[in-house]
Length: 127
Image (cartoon, rainbow, N blue to C red; front, side, top):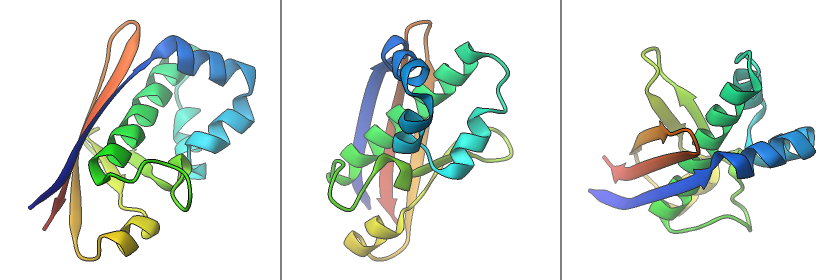
């Protein structure tokens, strides 16, 4: 059963500006520690910003799919987006969300980029 569908689109310039201005604080607000390690595996700032914007967009889309938004007990850094062995994005279902939606869940995630934007779509499904 589908719990929700979320979609988000973000401008790379917006994410890039935040990344360059307050790098550590900005990253701590958006990414988990393991995601920050993944980010710096990319050699160029351009690719880092694309990757970061895609993850940000996926987290926003996830919050829309579950209908909670951010704030309170749920933060961007609580939602961890990682890639499987083939590069497919996945989301670890955060503990706080499991309390709201008990049971087994899966997330279907798609992330895309253009020269100026990154977007994501997330479908959350109860299995």
